[in-house]
Image (cartoon, rainbow, N blue to C red; front, side, top):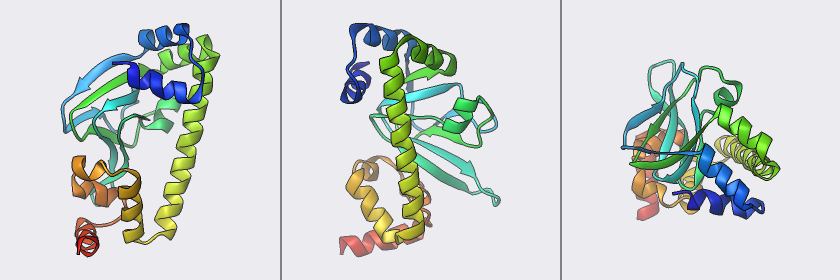
Amino acid sequence: MYDKLIQLISRYVKVTDEDISLCKELFEPVLYPRNRIIEETRKRPKYLYFIISGYIRLFYYDGSGNEVTSHINCPPGFITSYHAFIQQTPSEENMESITDCELLRISKLNLDKLYNESIVLKNFSIAIFEQSLVYNENRAKDLATLTAEQRYQKLIKNYPGILYNVPLQYIASFLGMKPESLSRIRKLIIS
C-alpha cells in the first residue's frame, strides 16, 4: 500500500529505512467509494491525502450556486485544500472522490511530526510544495492565455487517463468552460 508513496519520495530524495518506517507510522490507509465528499467546505481540512489509485476533485459553489471544479488530481499525487490545511482554517472547497479511491492520509499534527523527525522527508515536502506552486502558476497562465481548445489538448496530452475516469462536466469546469463548449471542441478534434 505504501509502495507508490515510497517510489515518489525516492524520485526526489534518498530515503532510509527509518524514513520509510516513519511514513508507515504517520500515513493512514483509507478507501473511499466514488462520489463521496471527503472534506467539506466551511470545515477545517483534517488531512493531506496521497492518491494511490483513483481520481479526486476540489470544487466550490459560485455566486449562482454552480459547482466550479478548481482542481482534479490523479495518482500518484497529493491533494487537500492546501491553504486551509496549512493554516488550519475552514476551507472554501469541497473535496470529492470521483472514482473509487485508495488513499494514504496524514494529519497536520503528524505532518509536522514528520518534518521534525526527518530532514529527508521535510526536503521532499518542500520539493512537492514547490512543484505545486509551479503547477498552479502555469495553470493560471494557461487559463489567461490559451484558447479553450488549447487548454483541452494540453490536458489530454499531459493527463490522458482523465478522459476515461472523470465526467466531462468536471473537466469542462476545470478548464474554465461550459460542457457544451467542451463537447464542440471534442467533436472538432475527433473529426
